[in-house]
Amino acid sequence: MIDETTGALPVEGMPAARVLDEIRALRAADRPTHGGRLFAYVYDPGVAGLDELAQAAYAESAHVNGLDPTAFPSLLAMENTLVGAAARLLGGGPGTSAPDVVGSVTSGGTESLILAVKAARDARPDLTEPRIVVPVSGHAAFAKAAHYLRVALDPVPVDPVTLRPAVADVAAAIRPETVLVVASAPSYAHGVIDPVAEIAAVAAAAGVRCHVDACFGGWTLPWLRRLGAPVPPFDFAVPGVTSISVDLHKYAYAPKGVSVLLHRDPGLRAPQFFAYADWPGYTMVNPVIASTRSGGPIAAAYATLRHLGEDGYLRLAAVTRDAVAGLADAVRAVDGLRLLAEPESTVVCFTADDPGLDLFVLVDELTARGWHTQPQLAYAGLPASVHLTVTAAVAPRVPEFGPALAEAAAAARAAGPVVLPPELLALAGSLTPEALTPDLIAGLAAGLGLGAGPAPDRMAAVNTLLQAAPVRLRERLLVEFVGLLQRPTW
Image (cartoon, rainbow, N blue to C red):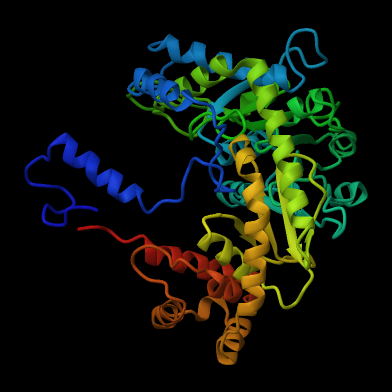
């Protein structure tokens, strides 16, 4: 752990080996990023030597600055290669119906989505109150973009069975002020693909841009299609699709910090840029939100794509497909659990029909057995669920997961559902965000085992309280609870 005798900034510099020892000690508390037991946040192909290659490439370009592409043409060349690879994979480029696709490399899916919204908003300067139409299954980053950019968000419900929006509902939500319509391929929460072709058609008929959020699936659905999976049209082959986002740090297996935002043509991308010359300093032009950008992540992604190649990605997709099938079978084998959707991509999402089987307790029991999953709260008629992001590294672990899931389910049944004090549930149901005081927040947090330092090992009580709270109160509680964890080290 950190040597507290030195303070946050030591008076005298510490030896390199000692600093690295501190980092390794801190990392010991993290979830495992390799080994196929973490079903969220990280993407592990299980390819020997790939980490070392990416780290070496990162080091080669870590101090290269993407602020000025004329000063560092190496970074420009690598960015253009990443954009070209993504465009070609997603139905664009020479010889396609979208030959003029252009793109930008961003720091992640959230930045890509914010920029897609910005480009659509800024393309309509005549509108004083621009709006975007997003299915409720669309990624929360669209709500973040709407908040940051002062754009109104018009949510569209999804069918509780298909987990997709009805095209008629999307069409009905489009107004004269709408600047962007969104579809997901697939939605992160449930892993189902929206009816992209139909959504793009109604957007085009209204003269509105259509963005396909393929951050999660854009680098895996094309390979699954080549393997024979019935993947519906979702990319630039679909008329009316004007932009697509795809994260390379997901299923392209690049290190964190690389996404690509593609536009069908340069004119659609132009409003994404920010240029400023009305000051005495250097003339600024940025295609993305950041000005200074390290070349490290871009070089690491470049090395990863060039090393794996099409054959490597096709092989990894096949391994992942088989892992998804095995995990889905494991869920089907446990009484009281059911798949919320039949897997269409690389997500296994399940819920519980047995009231004696508390999903939040099940997640804790899995964690105690070394399996780290992602709980999802109930929403608008959709039940609480457990999300598994499946990567190629999971495949060797599939035979172990079934028995572990059955054992965890039995333990969760034996423990019973979380029971919060009635007064706490009543408080959660009646409080408004404005009524939360520091003392009340501190009391709630203490009762749930939250405070300075790491989160508790078991989170079922926290999730149960959040589940009981209305959405706006839930958001405020999340902010306050995470704020308790983020305190300075002096």
